[in-house]
Length: 226
Image (tube, rainbow, N blue to C red; front, side, top):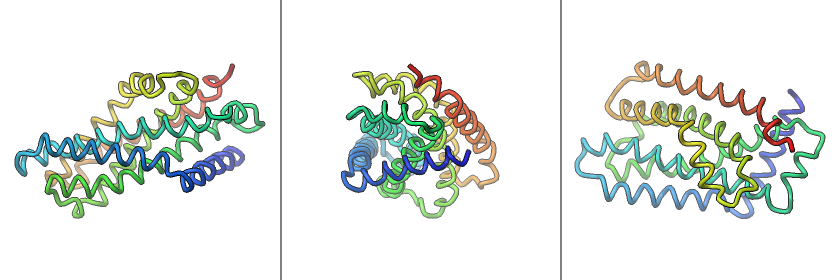
């Protein structure tokens, strides 16, 4: 396990160094998420009550679509110059590769969410600061499950020409429980529900996280074997 974690941290550090130089993933996905949120606010904002019902769906849809784009761009780096083949041939635990790419995707999406949350608050005239901590917990738990599942299936699309389309078709049915839980829990939170009433959704999303993290660590090796 120690070697697996060291491999994961090395891959995360590599992705972050590349991102610091290029800004490829965060800028692309950030602009896409912002544009999606602005268009949705212009289309669906009617009054304060409607905004409270619609805003959670807009937030999680923007996260989901930008997440697919972020994971696709992140794995595209491994496809270039046969980096993926070099990683698979290296004498390292393949579970470490999975954890490193998943954690990197989580950090990229977290950066996008830092921009999205206040933007949704401004565009839909909602007070996001008063619920910031429980909302951050919901976003963290939901994002972990999303990237855990997405990273596992992203590797299957590395050599596919229509990568983002294939990933979307495979991924979205699988992550429906965590997306629905995130939307409903966020809507209840905006409606004034205390954090105690959200534990049911948090437990469901947490169980989803554990299932896909465990599945990713076990299945990543056979899925990447020639």
